[in-house]
Image (tube, rainbow, N blue to C red):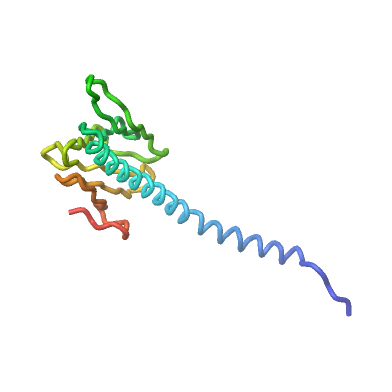
Length: 159
């Protein structure tokens, strides 16, 4: 009796078929996870920038604003002593992600509170999914994150 080494063509085809089926099932769920992580990353960056704008207002002794320019871009800016707009940071969101257009949060130079009478809400969403994260600023200028549809378990549902 002779010892056989290696694998047969049939064994190789079965292994390849099982691998293709497994990958076919895993890739769509991985795409949704990747989109969710990109959305969370952009929302966290916006949250950090809002907190930074607040601290810059107090540090500089000037009102500092975070303003959404388009659905994919926002900037942190202030008016200097000569009434010239100075841009501290300009951010373009990754492809497929959007933020509420024409939204503005101006932080007071004395306490870092919001100058607006109505608290600001920035909505970060994905054009690929229905997932959305809201960043709600209270009158004190503090940021809270929530989801309006409760899809993301890591965030509370917006009230």
